[in-house]
Image 1 (cartoon, one colour):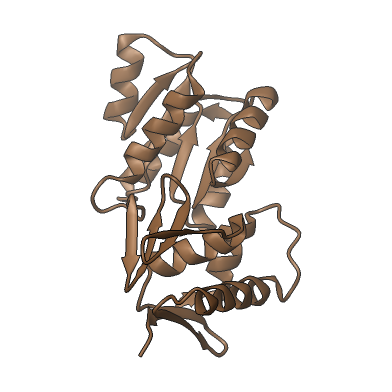
Image 2 (cartoon, helix red, strand yellow):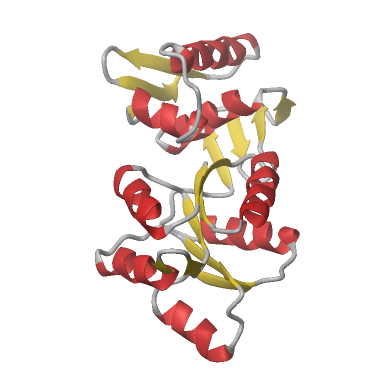
Length: 224
């Protein structure tokens, strides 16, 4: 799933992005409030990791704005502000969790996973349709409980289609979730990955099908 990191320390931001991509997340990385506000206004994210001390203002302002408009986006504040009053202010402003620098990367990943497992969020720890199961924490797909060897982008397609099973997922949403803001995307890239996943599922006996809704997107359902 796609996560936005807003962090103005280039070194830390790169480390976060590299680690979270290795953990299976699609990462967009921004360094200021203005760009973050623009991205959040046009893109649906699974979660936001937010620094507070940004070059063009306080991250709390964008946090309060999101909550003011009833946006349920899971938000993990990651900041050097470690005082009790700071933590209370962040949580009362709408943060779902608050982690103080310096921090353990493993703890950050565990806290992010915990946020994304909460009821009502886009993510859940396990997804199932017919004989296909996907473990979002382990980033592993199973058919008839047997692990399957899929590429990272095939997994990204499978996860999103499973999360919206029975509903049409637009090509644009798939493109955004798989490639992010900075991806160099060929015009037929989504079609290629959907085709590969469809063939893989057929070859391994998955009892699901991916139907193309011409001009709109794709939908995953149980096969007949």
